[in-house]
Length: 411
Image (tube, rainbow, N blue to C red; front, side):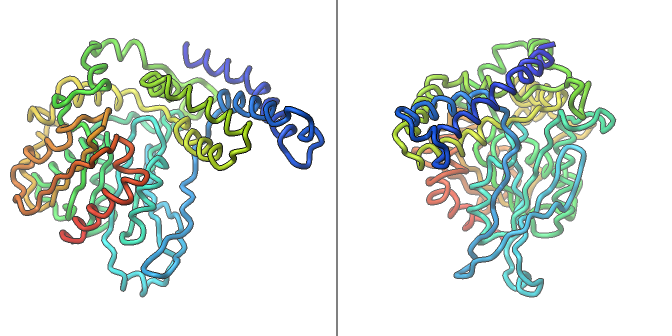
């Protein structure tokens, strides 16, 4: 019922949001006589703030149209190479003749985006940083409310199988990079392949800020999952998709609830950010205002998660610690990271990460006991929070060069 009430509220507010957007434009556009009135800038700022607080946020685009290879500017073409009900594998193909592409000999990178509320475009800066030296693919997870019930459920083990299918589809010499939530299913995918002696094992796996072992340095996110009984999650955050979406009737953890949780973790910071946005508009600081728009266009664009996937993740990763305990079975097959012997491992953590605490990702080093020490590496990014390890200045200057060197050394 909550989802239906939210949809009714959204429908009722839609005309108000359109009016606020139009009014903000009338009081700010140079072509409008209203923009010449006293206090027009303040009025426009107020209406735009109202509009952005109440509007729906659509899925952003990657907007990665070109990159630099050496001294050459090269166009980028997004290609969907694999399509599955709950995910598409996108290839950021360099717009060069086939012969020239082969001559570059760039390592193939499978960037596994989180299925934790935001779109894969959250890793836009990660892709941008990797493109000059790598052939980059990314998992673009679907919004569960857009997937018809006829497509079936999506479990945590389905995520693991999707990763394996993508690795095989990309061919030989693949390097995995998983960010946050997918570090766990990515490790499971490679472990199962190693146990089965699969010939398509990746060359390396880089794990960034992920909950491999949530018993280490537990954060507020971890505490929420352990303080509440499993039944609370089943009964309190799972709802059916309303009839106005293709996935009508599917059980999901709604994106709007996730977004409320994101904001609730630090409400004062978001309130201050919106106030600063209003003041920037009043003062004509368009550059700062645009930075705010870009950030919240991404941050506020959320997706629904399949209920079975979300609940199994809570149980397996955050409550039972099945991976580090060595008890995780996927359809009767035990996940054994110790069976991985030839895949190089790089774990990366942010010193100030308040989502995946220090030591949680590094735990993969001990679990993967079969990998020689010479093929293992760990790095703590100083003064770096969760998002800083894959986006922003510290990602570009501190983390990205280390990943590039690691992949090159293991190519």
